[in-house]
Amino acid sequence: MIPLCVPEIRGNELKYVKDCIDTNWVSSVGSYVNLFEDKFSEYVGSKSAVVTMNGTAALQLALLTLGVGEGDEVIVPSLTFISPINTIKYVGAMPVFVDVCRDTFVMDAQKIEEVITAKTKAIMPVHIYGHPVDMKSVMEIALKYNLYVVEDATEALGSTFNGKKAGTIGDIGCFSFNGNKIITTGSGGMLVTNNLIYGDRAKFLSTQTKVVTENKAFYHPEVGYNFRMPNLLAAFGVAQLENIKDYLKIKRENAVYYNELLGEVKGITLPIEKENVENCFWLYSILIEDEYGITRDALVQKLNEEKIEARPFFMPIHGMPPYKNCKHGDLSVTAEIYARGINLPSSVGLKKQDIEKICEIIKKANK
Ligand SMILES: *Cc1c(COP(=O)(O)O)cnc(C)c1O
Image (cartoon, rainbow, N blue to C red):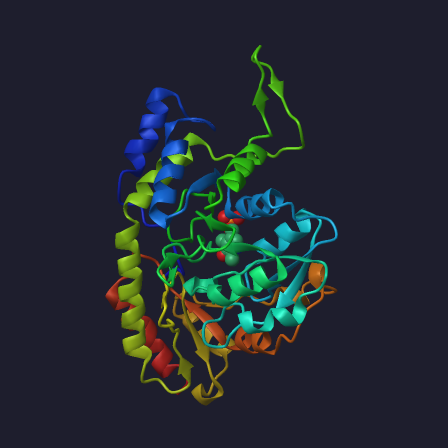
């Protein structure tokens, strides 16, 4: 089986985790927690970073930090993994769905203004599969309507927009270290911001709003959360981050090779990279046009039969039971590319021969 996207563990992971065990610092405080936050903010270029137990917690924490809650609306794409939508619900706000672009697969900034109301409090761009949303337009709209911007950069670690790393452009950006992401800690997440007040507030909320009084008792001035990552996992993360440049280089080479082999195939639309953007190509993704001759589902099935893990794009969330009554704008592109999109194997460990095999099957499947 050629898997869709699996971890690459080739560096100091065991050494640093062993260090935690040897020193008995395995839980939620320890030097690797601070080191991971410092190294991560240094890598993405943010002033502050707060590590969390997963990416979903980072997104929820971002909304809590900005005070998004009951009665507020948050603009978000429907074509996404469900996580950001659920976090809007967790804080008592309502998602409002906006369409995506056909060429980049991400939120269409030109359609955001259509769904803004007096209740809109924030915009949540999700950089799915690695291509960043048009953040210049998003930030202009946010400024004009006085809205917060929380970037879901969980699939775009290492991607850039106008030279800035995805996740560092909005008020807050969030990352995930789930096993299928660019780097992993097994499970984990990170919140980054250039606003130190937000950074401190996020850390405070994520650690049960704990204040240690003069006599060493704990005092909690408000409802807090336990979103902390243990030192063991942070140690793993530090080791993963040491190799990120290599991982990104390999992912780019793999995407270029896929493009080369699939470029001539009629009816396959390749992923793009806008001029002002670097796409991390987290999941290499293509669209199956009518011209190809067989449907997306038929191709996925053929790939799966050949032991290749390919997957359809995210099923739009606005059709799912918890969110079917939510407001939305025109979602015609969302529906169309959901029906056409496929993610192909994209692990760092993918071999050239694997890509060749996958592309051969795609070339023949419609014959
Ligand atoms: C992976 C992912 C998340 C967060 O995932 P966790 O499993 O909670 O770490 C959030 N949004 C998107 C778009 C994702 O792909």
